[in-house]
Length: 157
Image (cartoon, rainbow, N blue to C red):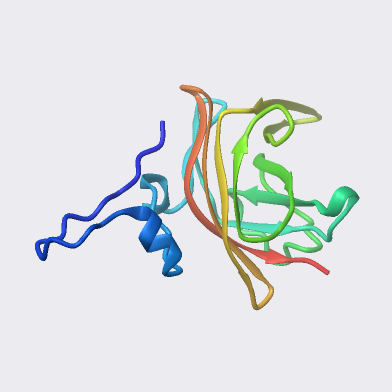
C-alpha cells in the first residue's frame, strides 16, 4: 500500500534510507507528493482548512480536516458537509492507522451524521512549528472513502 521513493546515485554511493534518516532526512513516501484529496461518501473531497484542538486525555489532540474554507478554524461557525478527524499526539511521528489509532470520515446530511472509521493507512506529522502542524495522510476505508496527500493546519490554544 505504501511505496518508498529511492534515489539512484551515479557516484556508486549507497542511497539507503537508514543512512539518510541518520543524517536527519526522511524518505518521502508517494502520498506525500500531492495536496490532500480523495473521496468521502463517493464524492470528490479536497482539503482546504483544518485545526488541531488543545491536548486532551493521554496527551492526544483532535486533528480535524475540512473541505470548507473555515475563516476561524479554532472557533468555526460553518465547517462544510464532510470532514476527517483523528485523535493523536501532536509531535513529529508516523502513526499506522488501526483499531486504536483511527481516522473518522463524517458526512453531515441535514440533521444526520454518517461516519466511517478508517483503520488502514498512515498519518504522518512532519513538523510542528509557528502555530501550525504539517503532515500527510494515506487512509482508505473502501473505493468510495479514501484520502491521500499533505496538509497544514492551525494549532488552537
